[in-house]
Length: 170
Image (tube, rainbow, N blue to C red; front, side):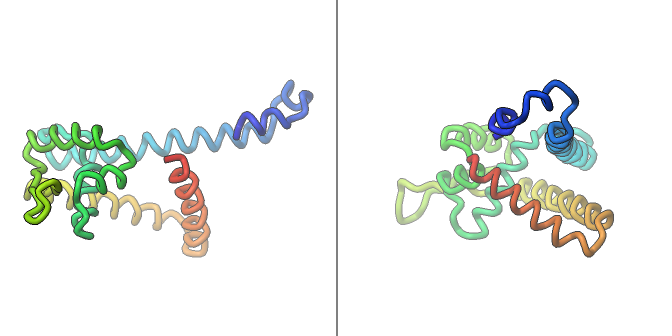
């Protein structure tokens, strides 16, 4: 997309400082900075709650979160959770194995169909998930405090469009 845009530009504009490119660079900088800021804030919040003793990565926390989301719909099998996370079954299996060893997840065999296994969170995973959800609530509340009410709908619409775009990439 960026290459298409650059190809359409007049060569004279490319020689100087291009205002449109500046906007695109600012947009890119915003996304990169925002993404890493959120991940860093999540990690700091987790470390603060646990005094750094949990030794969980943000990716592992998001696996735990996905297990809870899938469990709420009764579809907490490996395939569904892998799709929810946008990862391969092998990647989820590796993450599951690590989290199982750490005591956050267990697997249970379906009583009727012995080929199906469900990923189940432990009580410890519940504590982590609750803290992670509280972090997200604080984050959204903090954003809502800084954005005027009249702009929240437009912001939500814009973010929905971005989310749709990123989901198309998966």
